[in-house]
Length: 81
Length: 408
Image 1 (spheres, each protein chain N blue to C red):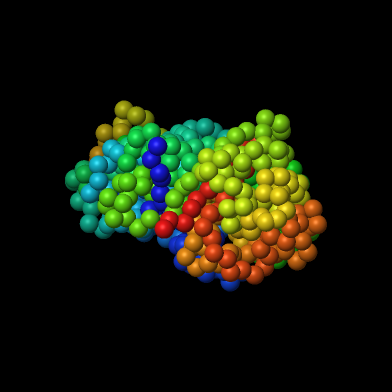
Image 2 (cartoon, chains in turn purple, yellow):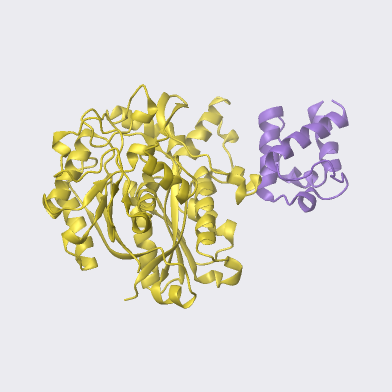
């Protein structure tokens, strides 16, 4: 799976979790939490949807790797390949 | 003790998302019950709301919360606007939210069980939102989160007496000086739990009819049970002196109530205790029975429940001269925790328009429900209304009767 495809997977998940946000203008290097007003329950939603939809487990110690879009894609690409 | 008045009202029900629309449909005899396909259970008639969730809620918050929360937020926001109040202009720590509920958490739990069924019941797929969604204060807490209210909040669990009970509890909080503004009433998301349909069905108490709009028919000889509905009605209550001081539009005064318990059966109501409950409300209001102009009944369309309530009314009010009697469930079904509050709301305009809306779907009045010709059937009647007694009764024998007075 390419990085672009992984990015789209993450965007699709966030679209359900934060339907009021404009996801076209996400800066991939900046904090998702700050840009989209996400909180810890939202990140748990992302973790849950990755588990449900893609059978990917994100252990708690790896949660910091979901901080930005780029770090998320970097972290998930090997797991989704 | 302070007198308590209603200064705002917000509602959503199957026949309207505001009082004017609801009243218009009540007077026109227009019900709205639809067939609904329920998970596991199949089709059943139900009263469904179509209010605009995003008027007061972000989609993200609606997704995170519950249907009961969205209904509560819509009603509370509408009630506050109706009262001409803004939280930002008030001491938010002196506002309280008291929401009557029949049950809470069934919908959310059933949804999660259906969800993990897709994963062979592996609990690692159970949502982290489960606990905040299902705690018993959840709908009232969602209102506080949404509106920035810092005062006390709770849900008043009172089966199908909850709509009245929520109002009474709110009035009591004002009388205790716990709050200056109280939001009280009741809500229901019950149509989203298959369990309530299946439970009533197993009790042989779920209404069936080829025409869903004919399914809810309290007092009719051929009634065959309950139509489940969702909805909500929340009121802004204030102490009279506070309301007058700020020049509020006073809709009505709460002048008395009775709350008691049958202690005789899990399900079957006890007309003696119901009568005592109504009599207690009259006593607290300092009223004689013949001063009540209208009784808004709880009757749900079950054969036994309707007969018992009429029997209780007769024992308190006699045959004549007696108040007129109507019923709103014939229009949208039984809105459970919202029922008492929503049904009262639909009757409040009587104070101004001098009309009593009918009970519809009574093709043949059950002789056992005959009440001296006082049930308003199928067409509204003209009548000056100064006092309304509103009944709400629920399982485990919980009774709540509320009396409101036209404010002059």
